[in-house]
Length: 162
Ligand code: PNS
Image (cartoon, rainbow, N blue to C red; front, side):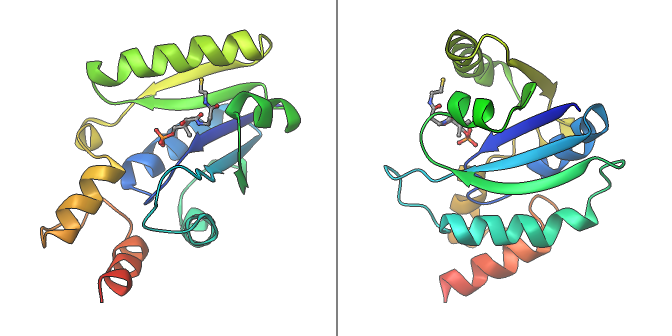
């Protein structure tokens, strides 16, 4: 059983995240999309709302028979990964600027849990500039974000703005 963890804040879920899920899912039998309950940040969506969005959107993503599970976690990603008995942590890399941060996380996670490898996928070029932070900023300032986030996320963001 090859089980992976795709951890993140997903505040909000973007089409870049979905692209990484769609492309990495065929490599695994099961994938846990782990939503970080980050108490330090004040998120746009609560962890429950982020999980609900993922549960609604994921069935429309072709995951090639990989069983998809949405779960939330607090604390260390490596600890959650171990608890869930995953073999790999999946992360996407967009640009060189992501590399240093991701390298540090991968090395630290490997130190914490040597049996779990981090697997990197290069982001799809059409999403290489898409981040949750940028999507929130552009949306809140009235810019167009369609095609970059799922329609459901856009409508949930509109509800927040009202
Ligand atoms: O989507 P993000 O915000 O880039 O995801 C970052 C995330 C959740 C993977 C990272 O912040 C994380 O792993 N946080 C949990 C706390 C932790 O394990 N910190 C040490 C990482 S080496």
